[in-house]
Image 1 (spheres, helix red, strand yellow):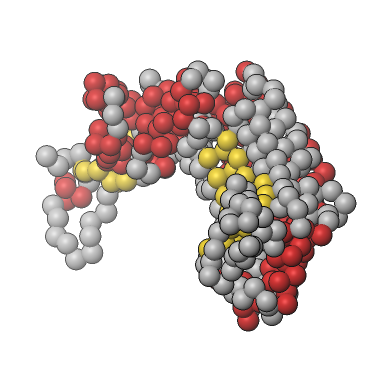
Image 2 (cartoon, rainbow, N blue to C red):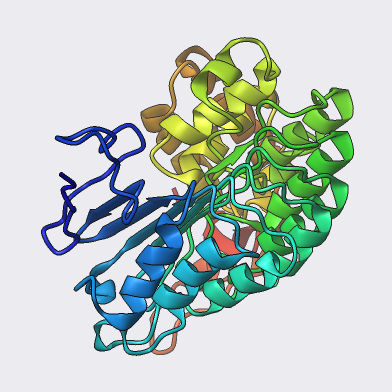
Length: 391
């Protein structure tokens, strides 16, 4: 006796189940299909995907595609009938759920899906028909540089996309150049990018680090597990990105948004240079990017010259003193040196500011003694301080 599972009852059939119920036969109609009201997962090893897509298109499954938020296909080729039919049924047909296909899907995950022979075209078309995607995951899809160059223009058109996972593929310098162009786009909203287990080398790392100099949104860029371990040149690009110690202003303009370049085990097992790990920890632990910038300035610059405060738009002594007060309140580990640095900076600031004397004019209608009107005014940095005869 064969027992049929009902999609309308939201039954679940997984790879190891359904083999033997009462008669020992396996239900091939929804083989490896997992469905919940907001999530659809299909693992295709037989005719299940084709039968499912046929039932989806003709309405016999009673599935409301408009409720699906997450779509996951595992081992479904996009160049043949299985994955192709499912993506077409869910994202192309405007009749499903009474709304445009794919309008409500927020997460798309294709795991081990073949993209050859037209699969890339179908994927790019799917991305354009799902404008509300927030997460796109394409692991183990044999993505090479040419495929990435075709896919990323469609990714660029997703205004809400925050998470892009391209790990365990064949991406190298060409794909990284395309990804760097995406990260340089001021409209890019990505917060997490995973290119773990690809063919990333020092040149790729330098391209990505250069793209992140003006990107204040990306929080994690996973580089772990690549075929070529990053050497000095690759890590040095990220060191200069996270904390450029050439000047105080350069440190202030460094990237204070990136918080991770891999999982915690990767960062704390000595695979990431200590200086970079230290900068990432500042970015994670500080309450704002300004606090992170302040910590890095105090960390790498033992002496703060007067010119550095001018570059930070701190051109008046009270502003300099207020900066040190904020540093004393929000930084950790610099308490013993902040007082000394504040005194030194105050002394050098007072010496470096130009001093000038100009003859003051009495206010209109004010009665002043003749000798008082002749007192010169001390001017420091363009701001009146006091008259020389005043106490």
